[in-house]
Amino acid sequence: MVAFPAGRAPEPSQTKAHLLSLGCTHSLSDRLFGLPCCSFTPSFSGFSADLLSLLFLRTAQVSDSMRLACLTLLLVSACWALPFRQSGFLDFMLEDEPNSGDGPPAIPPKEELPPEVPAGPVCPFRCQCHLRVVQCSDLGMKHVPEQIASDTQLLDLQNNKITEIRENDFKGLKELHALILVNNKITIIHAKALAPLVSLQRLYLSKNLLKEIPSNMPKSVQELRIHENQITKIKKASFTGMVNVIVMELGSNPLTSSGVDADAFKDLKRVSYIRIADTNITSIPKGLPTSLSELHLDSNKITKVTSDSLKGLKHLAKLGLSNNEISVVENGTLAMMPHLRELHLDHNALTNVPAGLPDHKYIQVIYLHSNKIATVGTEDFCPPSFNTKKAMYSGISLFSNPVPYWEVQPITFRCVFDRSAVQLGNYRKK
Image (cartoon, rainbow, N blue to C red; front, side, top):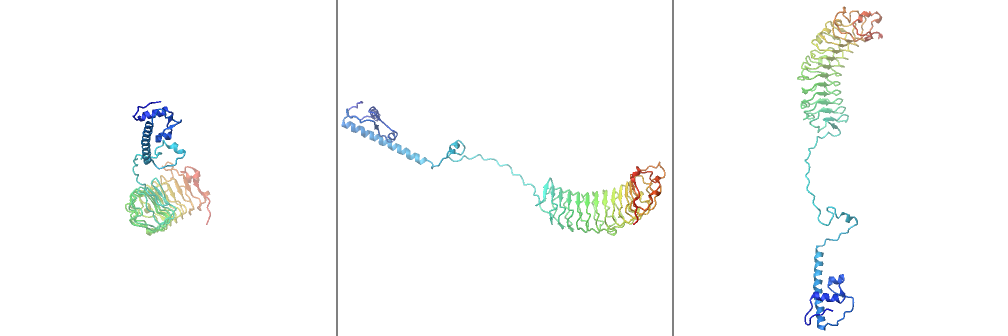
């Protein structure tokens, strides 16, 4: 037993030690409130009444101080506590993840946005656009669509219902190379509509309702196809300045010989192919370009071939005059075309083989079938001498003529490359 000096209050530490020596302990709640718990009935022997009273008074004071301190800590903790949040089982697995705690979410670093890419060209509604090609055919359109990209090189508008080409329909299309307007219902092309197409090379206007050649066509055009319209006249100024044209198709129009002005083709310095077929012309147009290598005048109403009409065509290699009403080919006509290699005179009204064939050096193919030829002489095709320099024939057609083929002498075709190249017989009287 611990003895305390008389008249002196024990220290707190001494009091605690004395209580422990008496078998007193502190439980969890006792530690919180500072109250001792003894497991036996304490013996007060050896203690005076004054000392015992002082001991419990001091212990009570210490307990009050500890209780006040604990309550203060509880109040401070409650002030800082966050609201209650129900946690599930998986919430414990997210404790290590960013922004999974109860604190404020972490602000991610600001990412730099990629530079804005300018919007690409807009394709006209219902059309298909790919690699500078705008495909708007077979859509029933009544007007040229808007929003055509300025870098378009081919614009296909065929098989629609377009009736008019307006002034600004092709505005800004400086890189357009080909314009296809085939099989529409175009009656009018504005005088300035084609002016912006400074790079245009191919212009297809066939199968429309045009009554005249469009004005102010781009000088860059190399291929012009305007057949199957309602054109009745080709004016002298129709092709002014179009020095780059190589191919021209004017067939299947209600043209007449009087409707084609003299020298209407004068400015076509480079043209090599012209076709004026299925019209009402009765004679070969005058003033044809000397650069021509192919001339097709089939299915017209031509009655006569004169030397003046073909004068100067030194480069002409192929002449098509089938399905006309030709009864006469003037002497010297073939001499105007020294480089002619193929001549089509079938389905006409000829009564004899055209003169000048034996003297022509380069002609190789001649079609004379379906005429009215009744006789064929031994010198109609070949020169009299074998030593004469002449290209060999690869095709001569004389069938469907009234000539008795069994009367034709074999020597007649001595300058033919192969006898199978000659076609005779099969004539029927009409």
